[in-house]
Image 1: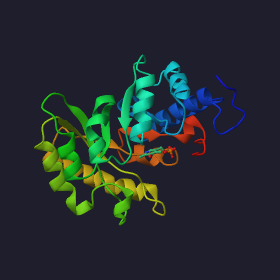
Image 2: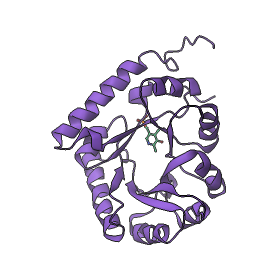
Image 3: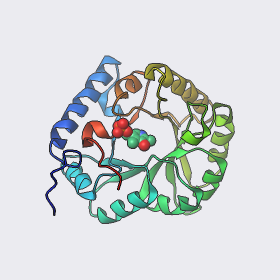
Length: 233
Ligand SMILES: *Cc1c(COP(=O)(O)O)cnc(C)c1O
């Protein structure tokens, strides 16, 4: 193992940051009149080495998130000895869907009919969130608000997918609390079609408190726990 001198890639302080976030999540849950046990904190480890994920597992982390297929696939293979649940949270190419299914237990970014079709299976079931785009920019990922219901219906009609609920990323330039109210409204619409799809994947390092206040059940937290992501090379 090489010794890292870069503060951005050091794992020093991970235990402290994890503890601080766990406390922050519990505090926000209680402030919202919710039970911390009802929340799943997914540590987003993208760009960080597998060694950091192993360290997190040693600190009791079960749920980890990645946003790039190849990186996720490699880390999941390297860490196959650990009892981790892998969450895929990034944009997913349809041609990579079947491979992502092999290591990911939960796909948070189902945002179009072609991806649903690519994820279909008669043999196994993968948990899925439908991602809602809260911006007007189609490049951001997520289904447009007006296309939410048709996409949900397609998921429900497709074998091999279990719909958990709705996922979103709060846009830059909008108050997170307002953005998450929109997610909550979308969740209500999803639940009217799929009563079991009660979960909401929302909240990141900067806005998880607002997300918890708005009903988020799955938090995707990266840098607040891992420290800054190493530079891409
Ligand atoms: C990177 C990422 C996160 C975590 O972001 P942080 O700001 O580092 O907490 C959450 N969700 C998605 C979809 C991401 O790509």
